[in-house]
Image (tube, rainbow, N blue to C red; front, side, top):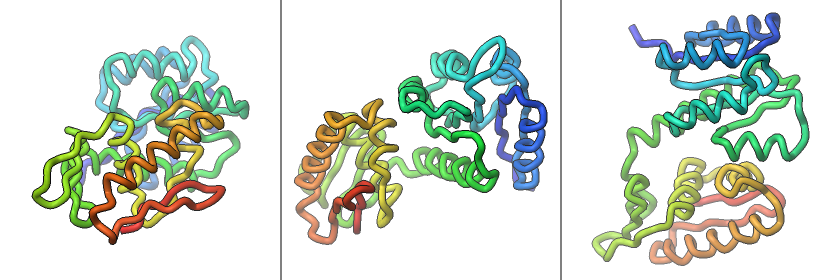
Length: 227
């Protein structure tokens, strides 16, 4: 029998919390439901969840503070924020303190489930695919090394490696420009967007020994790695 994936859900609205819990349980998730941030932190410390769904506005300890406390000891567990806030600055803050995704209320359960599965798949990819293949290149994400066949390896910067990793995991699909800017740069403002363009240019040059690989600009949306 397969082990259920455990999700820690912190939501202070009882009705919404129960709806989310029951919906996730029908999809074969185990859900630990908490109604405030302090309780959620204790449950987190005494259990082994694989993903966190945190409401931002909670009594005793809000979702952002809870995420900061958890990120102090765990920088890899996926975190999805739920919030009624719609200000761009709130979204930026959520990503800057270690959030992986951000869902504004009201939302559909199907959208939440898709986002949960996407994050879990990313984590599994990172754990199981330390060395990835891109055409005739091998990419060691952990060591941040890119190598074409038997030629000398290229050492990537931290941001280059993470940007390339996200392009690969979304291969042949559009990588959302705003999402990746908030995740890697902390903001999707004009100057960070220009910075990302520079990094894309650098990656294109480092991948130019294989003409089957392209990173194309999808105007108004983002970038797509085609291989």
